[in-house]
Every structure is written in structure tokens, then in C-alpha cells.
Amino acid sequence: MKNILNHLFDHKHLTNTEAKEILKDIASGKYNPAQIASFLTVFIMRGIRLEELEGFRDAMLDLCIPIDLSAYDPIDLCGTGGDGKDTFNVSTLASFVAAGAGVKVAKHGNYGVSSVSGSSNVIEYFGYKFTNDKEELERKIDKAGICFLHAPLFHPAMKEVAPIRRQLGVKTFFNMLGPMVNPSFPRRQLVGVFSLELARMYGYLYQQSDKRFAIVHSLDGYDEISLTGRFKMITDQAEKLCMPNDFGLKRLTPESLKGGKTVEEAAKLFEKILRGNGTESQNEVVTANAAAAIRCARSNVEMPEAIALARESLKSGKALKSFKLFIN
Image (cartoon, rainbow, N blue to C red; front, side):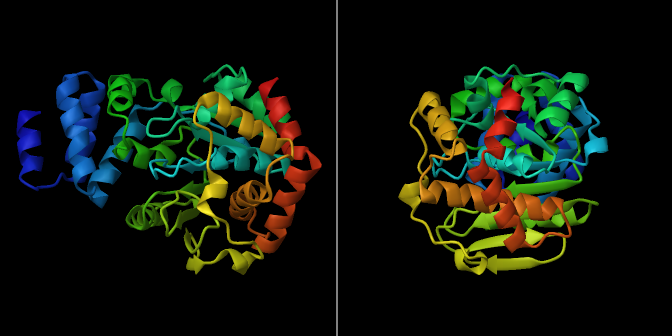
């Protein structure tokens, strides 16, 4: 690791193959925590290169425990996190709204590292027991329209890194990798990213695949469609710069999207919105992101119809029903 670190400290970069092999060595326990922390910090101080991101992704996918859910052709709704905005759990809520609208979802998630409450924190608060049992996950997706893939159960090789990430408490390149390494290898995906540069890297890598995808980034820094201003949407068909009113939605204030300060507060807010008691702003931002997922999952549905389907799922209680079936 000393030679690798000196190479990086000299402002040099890694090839795809080098990045892949280093991450595999980290996962195998070859390096100590201080060395791993130093390695992670390099990519906090400078931007990651496309080849490096691709190599890290390939290593994670090689090491994961895969699960075949292709019979459901599910979509994943996953954000990178790391935007520092402390919003409520938008993508997780949007996942249940999409499921309530009839879209099959294989949600990949983890505990929060740079935020108070990640998707796994919220799901666990309500008593859900994480599993990587295929039959149980299929039962969930059959019954509730959604299953949850808790990252540590499918990426056991990353146990060397998890405590270091928690101790650092800041975003690392693992935030960037999260949406790319869903162990069910979904062919449909809505991804929210925390920077425009990362959105473009994701777009390039996804264009090399057979995925139907939508990558979103709000230009004021959110890793989702925040409706607080302009947002970029990169899909397998086009790249667009959008405004909320392009879809008949109101522009929101950052303050209206704030989440709780604890996991308990975040979970209570999550349930409140799901029960239809959220504010207009909370409902609208969840609707917008769920609609983007519905549009991505169903090629024959345009955005206005997708928004109507998402709104109806939330208001009618279909999203809540999906959540109850999922938890129970």
C-alpha cells in the first residue's frame, strides 16, 4: 500500500485493472485500517477518474453475492448520498410509491454514513429483518411489489471497510459505487448522484450496458429531483436540463425538504408522509422521484402520466399498503 499511496500522492491515477485489484486486496484484509483510511481519503481530496470508478465497480460486482430477480424485471431507486443536504428519505419513500403503482422494485440500500439516516436505518426501525434469502425476497416482491437488498449481506467482502467509513463519517467513493453494485443486476434503474461530474460518469458507464436508466442530479447539489431548481436528467435516450414546471410541479424551498436529526425522527417523518399526512412539498418531491422511476420502468408511460400514477399511489394509500405488506 505504501507504493500505491505514494503513486497517488504524486497526483497520478490508477488504471481500471489497478483499481479493481487494489479493492479486491482491501476486501481480502491485505491492508490495515490506517492504510485503507489513507487510500479512501485520496479520493475525497481529488476527483475520481472514470477508469478508477469502473475498476472499483467491477471489483465490487465480482465479490458480491448475486441474486437472480430477473423474472420480475425490477427497477432499483438508489441515490449516492453524500450531498450534505440532510433531506428526508426521498428515494426510499419513492420506492414504495412506485411499488404501490404496480412497478416491481429491488431496492439496494445501506446504513447512513454521511447522513443521519440511510434507507437501511429507516427500514430497520420499523422492525424489518434484513435477509439475503432468495425465497424470502421473492415472497416480498410478490406480495408487496418490493424487496430490500441490504448491502452488507450481499457485499460481505466489504466488512473491512465498513467500520472505517463509519469512523470517517464523510462521503467516500463507496457512496459513488452504491447504486452501481445492486447484487440483482437490475436492467432498469433510477439513480440520484451528488454532482454533475458524477452524473456524466454514470451516464457513460451505463451507456455501455443494456440498462434502461435515468440519472438525476439537481444543480444546487441534491442527489435526487429536489424541485428546488434546475435538475439534469440523463437517460438511455437523451440528456435534458429540466425545471419543476416542465412537469407541472411547483418549485420548492430547501427548508421544506429537511429530514429528522435522529433515526427515530426520520422514521416518524417517513411514516407520516407514507400515510398521506406529509406537507405539500414533501408529497411533491416524493411524487416527482417515484414518477421518474415509473417512467424509467415503463417505456410506454410518459412523465405526465407517471406523475399521476405516483400521486395516486401516495394519496390512495397504495404506497402505504405496499409498505405494510413489506414490513409484515
